[in-house]
Image 1 (spheres, rainbow, N blue to C red):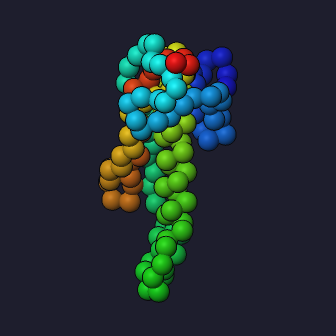
Image 2: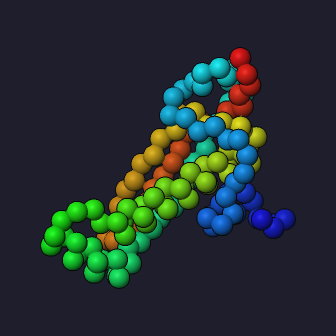
Length: 127
């Protein structure tokens, strides 16, 4: 990460994953922890488009059935990138955890989907 680049911008590249012990939970509380500060909404998203080569392989797969692993891999990478971005935004805002984490997806255009991860950035300490 360069001096001009924020953690969120760096997280746009999977090679620059945010470090640290960021807790991400779908619950509103963390067992054994106490929320001492709420920093607010944090989010991360990415939009991925299908690749024509993957579409050809997927089309063939529909003839015989089964998992379309090319799309599974693409969506898993997109989800990890969105999670990295929510971690980065939370770190930038001084949080050490995100509670109430949610993941959603939506089609943006034919062949492209967005993954959005959001939650509440908080500072927690041991109870």
